[in-house]
Image (cartoon, rainbow over all chains, first blue to last red; front, side, top):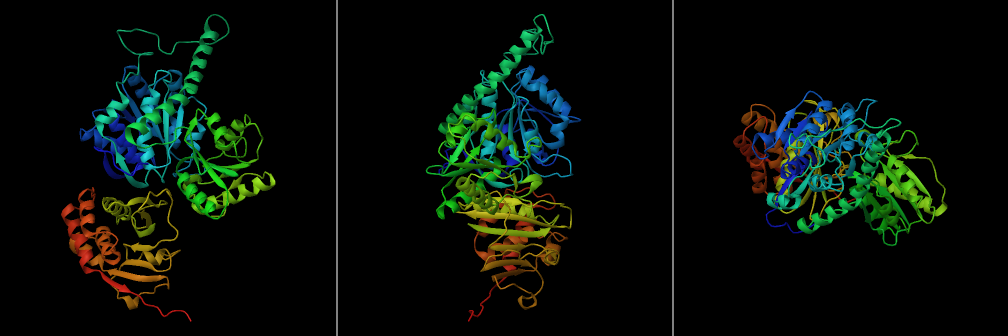
Length: 407
Length: 190
């Protein structure tokens, strides 16, 4: 983070939902379709206000449900518009059919997931379960740590999504409650500098609803025989290439952001105090701030612990994670969601899979906390650090630890 | 790092008070994080909001469990929740009350008390008991941690749903002027 405010930037105090709305406004989005849902609602209200005030010259459509939200935006995207929406939890679930279709059509939509735990039992509060539930359907996913990172990442998301080597939809995830309503000081970049950064929009060069360029959009493919199977494979492989290409693009876009705006956010994974670390904890999202403070306290006591934050979760930055964890003897992963099939957190499952490529097999443990709005504090991370320290010493892997079980 | 916990009831503007204070502190060059508590919020039910500030960047986006200051914008919320839970030694209490210091039961950690009859002021200005901006004035008076001028500038930037800017500016000043500040001197332990 820069200590000195860039000329022409403005310092504001806002929460994560307002920061996302500012980013959408600065990105000169053409079309917004929305359906409000807790804890996303105020984000949509800020956008509606920006549009009503004339700050953002976009069309906003308040549709009858999330299924229509994405359907409207798909059409707009095919017509060449830069598009945005935000959703979460049950809204995201209701959106699922067009949500699946969006990456296959290679539409560079940007959508915020204001993460919320999934039903049931009944809850309206934060947790990553909704975003994690859609991790395997072809959207790029990035998770933010701070209000400033929400603003910066939402702008960067357009440059990533619209890059010709990517052309995929991007989810920018920020934690429901702690980031959606948590306010902090935030630098608002200058409009012209954002315009220069994003450049001309070019969203439907490859697939379009355009009378000048008639084409079959989303044609019937697949089956056995004829050109169907090979066509389907070509589409699927293209999607997979776009995902893998995005790792490099995400890195380049973050570097350019750092050069232009003076704020250097780690693009894939961030290593924090990993020099000389014997063991590490791996985090994702807004929990990372408290975890870093816990690492500082542990280091001050002489414990050789470091932290690795995963920012880009899809595609999974496997090589970056393996490099970051190359020197440690053990690691613990803290998830804000659950993988029901594996009795652990989904980030843990991904981290272990990635570490299969590491030269040495090292023990790892899964920690789950912060579900349905529960707080993850420095003291929770002290426990995770303490347990991972034992793991580094004795190598004895235990079952998943539920950090808020006794809160 | 200085940590403040604001207690109130749904509808009194505890969360907005946190936002205004955050804006004022940022104006004075501080780093601030303000996190509202959440639960089954509804009008009249106890609510809390948390604010921490520092000279350097703050990373924790969490609730506050060991506040340096408790700012209580409702006179009776202390009956419903333990507003003193986890407070640090030497803590500041800024309390809405019509009572005198001697009538309050305070834990030994509290060293400074700011008392303001914000409900009477609110009934006078707003015709109902919205106390948030009055108690921001009380906070400034009792702690000296933020200037009245910065709070005035922050209020000018705020959107008020239930009252006008002029009323809230008057409320802030009345809160500042009418707050009684007491420093509690306790005998040293033997």
